[in-house]
Image 1 (cartoon, protein in one colour):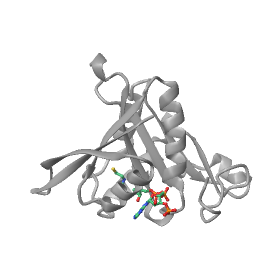
Image 2 (tube, helix red, strand yellow):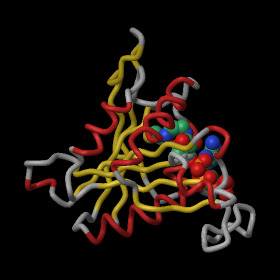
Image 3 (cartoon, rainbow, N blue to C red):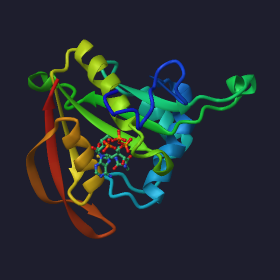
Length: 187
Ligand SMILES: CC(C)(COP(=O)(O)OP(=O)(O)OC[C@H]1O[C@@H](n2cnc3c(N)ncnc32)[C@H](O)[C@@H]1OP(=O)(O)O)[C@@H](O)C(=O)NCCC(=O)NCCS
């Protein structure tokens, strides 16, 4: 990655591994996402997800969509048998399944554990997502961010996303309305 070495590499010797997610990651995904919601990050999900709910979500993801995860490289052999630990994940899916005019458009969501942010994990996930999404026929990502989520907006801008528009008061969280920014990028 072109980060001047600050983030280290995600190759063979890196302390983390980026890989495609599987249904067996459901519990670890639920833990990651629930943690980000509980921390109060200004995201568009609320509440919490049970392991079964997360499993159902992942199991019903369109076959054109998918997700990648980042796991710390576990020291020692015992870790191979341990339950997966995921510190970051990115999910992508068709924007509007069943509407052929949107077949080339994907939506995307990114989750990085608070303790692992600004280490290039989100960017590493994006590199994987963009490559796989292109292979699956997507040529555009169009997604949404709460307008007060300055970290996410900065992150996506760095990746080359631009703002397509703002929906005023679109997200209502605990009775309060938030603007939602729609962002896009070609692949
Ligand atoms: C937004 C988020 C996914 C970014 O993930 P990350 O792994 O920390 O991002 P990276 O380390 O790959 O950052 C890549 C670049 O994006 C920009 N960036 C990322 N976070 C930023 C922040 N908080 N403020 C300003 N710029 C930021 C920087 O240019 C950064 O490069 P640099 O660290 O070399 O300056 C992460 O903060 C997160 O999970 N937040 C909570 C959940 C969330 O909001 N998800 C997005 C929902 S739309």
